[in-house]
Length: 295
Image (cartoon, rainbow, N blue to C red):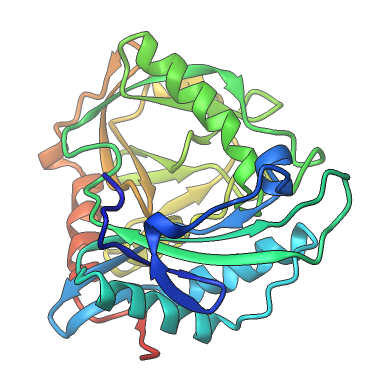
């Protein structure tokens, strides 16, 4: 699904066959989850293959590494250059790109100087599919921001996401919606959440959620379309009076939601401002706006 015998990846400054990559059993990332990564998409735009908001993603990768005391020597421009090379070598246009920074052998709970930088890419559609979603309120909560750096994209944080998604699917839902430690709605297992009421949007504020780059793009698009967006805390009960809702994220893009628990949103997706945001996002990524190019 992700690679074949001819797939080329970037690893520590070289472009090599994916099948030849090996990781150590004593890796701190494997044993303790201390590694950082990004999810990025490229699109076949009107001006050729472009990585959407590449600088923002690679800058965030640097910020995540710094939070986790990981030394990342490559600049954002060098990482972007490598990502374009991986796309070129694998003949990919509309693709998902995964840069990951993983650590070498260290069984202690202290930082290590052995740092590996890899970039892989593969063709991947919308992570949650193209249909409207049925979403359940998860029994799991997002981690307390005083327990870890929730603003960093850390490999180990995603055990929380796996648990929430697995629970939702086992109960017949497509995805989960999680609260923070105070019981306010936070986000999905791997995407930010917005609901629509009377043509306006509401989403959780930063602090207890991951600061998604797609989330920020939604703010930009809403401003261009003259839609109001309110950032505030809200409880799950408020969603039961909403008109529509969606998830957003790089892998997810913009995914509309049909039902929250047993509540079906009354406004048809086609008549919602949420759908207009989705269409505007699709136009944005298909253009050459908000892209960088270091090749």
